[in-house]
Image 1 (tube, rainbow, N blue to C red):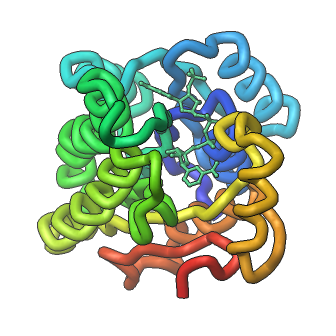
Image 2: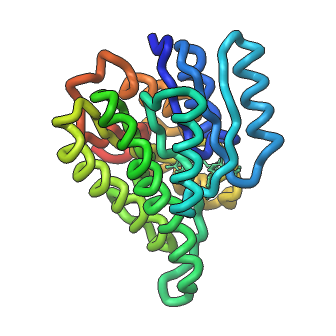
Length: 246
Ligand code: NAP
């Protein structure tokens, strides 16, 4: 149970982040729902959590902005007194072949997916060190492990997340903070809904379990890594991918 814990979930207005926010709230955590552009959807997640008897707050912050992340996490500590769980879930794709990829497409994806996680860890870990406890969970991807044609920016950001996770795990372990990554495969969200039918069919063929996953299946893994039961697990990458990587 997560009663009394304060959890920050980035990119919680939709998809996997929304499912994680709902799961952590259902276990008793107070959840800070971060979003970038989808204000109404973030407010809706808060309402759903409250309707189920949970508690949550909504914060806008573009995680790719270092200064805004500092302000955001300072505000959370001022308002709620602590940060027990940080889920770095916010992410974007901007696919294209390497030879045609613009610098801005590369930068946008790396700045959001990888630097965003650095920014939030940078400021949330300060509070966790004071508490001498904390759980950080970073969203990687199967693509960060295997690579994928047309996703050099995204794969680089998600492989970077794994390195960041392991370095942070080593650095923060002596302060009682665990840092792990989750590497989802294909999960049914807005991000994958844009895949053409042909690509979706070819993707399913690569999945031993023969189907896309659901956001709640990733949320269950995040809830486990955030729990007391996972207190001796750090620096790991948990694959939630129907068996794609084994
Ligand atoms: P999604 O449905 O597209 O949702 C993305 C979320 O990230 C939204 O809440 C969005 O907020 C937020 N976000 C984007 N840019 C942001 C920024 N600069 N600052 C703050 N929040 C930002 O994506 P998803 O499929 O749930 O994916 C969630 C995470 O899992 C991502 O890191 C993704 O790379 C990873 N992942 C997904 C899959 C998959 O198959 N779906 C597979 C492997 C890994 P707004 O709505 O406010 O823009």
